Image 1 (cartoon, rainbow, N blue to C red):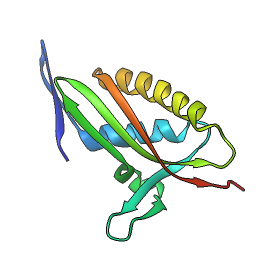
Image 2 (cartoon, one colour; image 1 turned 180 degrees about the horizontal axis):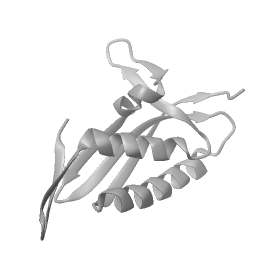
Image 3 (cartoon, rainbow, N blue to C red; image 1 turned 180 degrees about the vertical axis):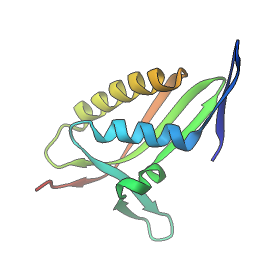
Image 4 (cartoon, rainbow, N blue to C red; image 1 turned 60 degrees about the horizontal axis):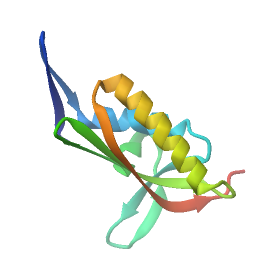
Length: 119
């Protein structure tokens, strides 16, 4: 993956995009209504629930002009309001990732890839 760099008065700080994706994914998993990240098999067009250790495959991190764009491919719980879950995810992730990295989050895109019934 690519890296994100910042210049400070004390030198350069470089953060691997996978670190940002892993942190953003763990914050997203704390949000009510999110079952998990989705992995898409391009060949078959199938969507599957990713395990916790491969969750970063469901998150894309891009940086442009020192601002982050995060794309989440998620599976939501059956019976929850998708708009409410999305608003909660956006506000939590934006706040916590900005606090963690010190980089402004410009945009968060959420792609709901499936719905799961939670037992």
